[in-house]
Image (cartoon, rainbow over all chains, first blue to last red; front, side, top):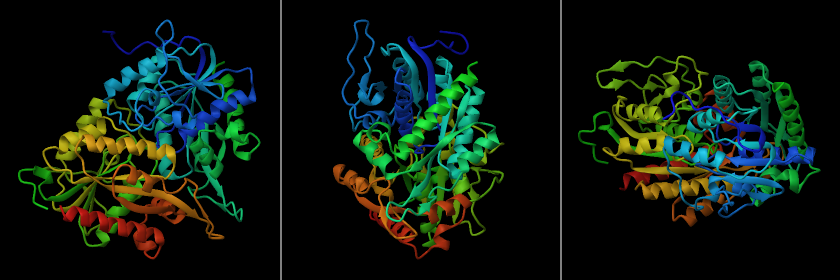
Length: 267
Length: 269
């Protein structure tokens, strides 16, 4: 048994790990992680980006990336990620049945995380985007203790109840010395498709203000647009299905800000 | 229906209902508080146990601030929302010294606290105890069920939003209920449609019908739709009683009707 905390060891072949987290559930971490990964590649086609779904209990990546099936094993017994839109992906969703609940205590989750991190044949990646589950518990601790994380993107909706948890999420990353790249304000405003009237369904600007209060960067706004949900449900993320749309542009702007921040925090 | 003999602090609690989802951010806490308020307005005594240790939303939504939690002979005294004591609450939010403190605990510690929450809160006499849960199917959920094994869980209400990424997770949660012998009282489809306040056009931002389909697919009762209502979001935000402020809204009548259906199915077992 190792004494003390596990030592951080980088994932073979992966240059930088970006975690997409929030603290609060349902603010759009997975949607943001998927579109961020695709936007990083859209901004610079020479970059290779992978996607790891660390939400063991509610793995959304398979649905969002339109991927299904059990991963095959490589010659050295590593799981081969499933790829779509040029992004190799790994998720618990590929290893279990659609309807099966994953009822695991913390210890089993830690062990599963270890496998998803270390026993996948990622090849050579510039970025590995990790979609985190909600909360501030076992998964977050396991990941940050086991691998060096280049930076964390915190997603929140504008409402107070989400910001409270986003604040806790930010504090958690500070506790474990992971640099915070900044905050993304998701579902910022809704434009009625009929009359274009703007409604701030979940409040306005809360995440931008929180970024300011915490002294963190504000990475961008993503509007609440039917297109994002419709394309997500079809497994065709908006960045690839409607690259000229304002929603896709919003994600590309976030991706540019993320790359800029990665350079800033890692020098 | 029958008093729970020898159950200690839960002996005078008539019904225990879990509010589950599997998916985060679908509105479990919002629905829990709104159901609780609808039930109290209908004359019931209600308790809410907030078992989301990482993101306790209940205290904020009911605007109870940060009161001290007192001990009595039988354990912790719950926090009441007003002097009439019709709505009792317990949450980790009341026990933290700093409200912004992040609770970064691994499973075993969470399990231990939830055990205490279930057995050591002096609820007194309640018609319904609603248990608000975090997303997922992990330590917290197992801890709740194990600790409630000695008592009785009357059933679970599943909350989902209509879109595919949500219903997928909630489907897993329904399977969890079946495997653990928890009766599924029904499925609520939350954030079901948004009516533009300007032109009244209804936009299905998070899709529509997914909750009803899920109920059919899993052989569960469909309890109803609750629309995406900015007035509800802002009441929650400000910790105000939505039921009192907007009793004539379609949202409130949806919630009220759902609470009646749930109460009826609890009383007919």
